[in-house]
Amino acid sequence: MVTIGTPRLVLRRWREHDVPAMAAVNADPEVMRWIGDGRVQTLEETRRAVERIERTWDTAGFGLFAVELRETGELAGFTGLAVPLLLPEVLPAVEIGWRLGRAFWGRGIATEAATAVLRFGFETCGLDRIISIARIGNTASERVMAKLGLRPERETTVPGNGTAVRVHELTRSDYPARLRP
Image 1 (cartoon, rainbow, N blue to C red):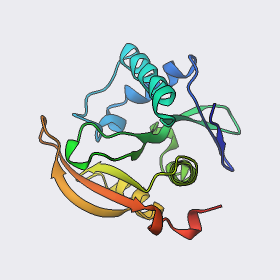
Image 2 (tube, helix red, strand yellow):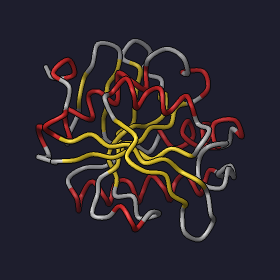
Image 3 (cartoon, rainbow, N blue to C red):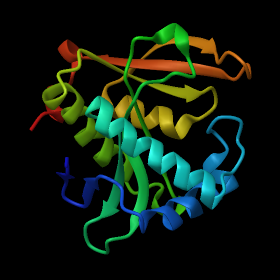
């Protein structure tokens, strides 16, 4: 079981009691505005997604961490690594991503969690390159990407739905020294 601690957070594998809290995040139209087609997700869809995340951990050795606030134990959302199958042109690749409930926006939580995940990806998983994908217009996520040292690599569209996205990347050789322990 991989668990990562940061000053304010615990990044860990998923538990059954996380599903309702994550479902509340996924049911918020403002949170989901920049995800996929913008459609909110039900409790059952969230449950299936968490099951898929856990299977990925078991098969790939990485996945999306549940992000828990150390002080309160609240689930803020997730951050972690995944293979971006929605965008075949970038494969093979591993993507860092995050999704937090609105109550946790603007507090540096995404940056703190993602910094720990980058370290995990480069130093534990031995990845040479990590990408991140944002819909054009999602400036909040792109600000986090910039803080992490990811740089725009290309603009493209997602096959099937035509969503315009920007792909950012960070290579092991460009991994900022300030993000290392």
